[in-house]
Image (cartoon, rainbow, N blue to C red; front, top):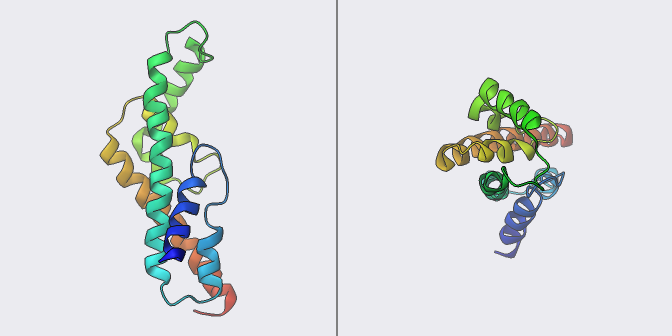
Length: 144
């Protein structure tokens, strides 16, 4: 049971704000041909989704300070973020393989997207990203 909790905690904490490499423990499972690879993939994806949802709610709460004098986001930057949000919409959450992917939930939360839909899209994006990485590790290690 301890290994599952550690996998969840690693995936959760590695996805809060701008921390890289949440897949290290999961790829370790794949490299050593752990018999419970698919449950590990799900646990890791759920942990990563929870971490990304923390980012989403940071964006959700930051919008309260948008009109404050000390807030660093001026109208020009706000308009730029709004253009990105309009262009890609909430679907940008599926792209968990892009650089600075932790910023996407903050932006989507900033524009008050629906949390349940955001969580579902983040989970799908993380699951696809992690599954392709695991399959590559397994293939390289000679398992598949």
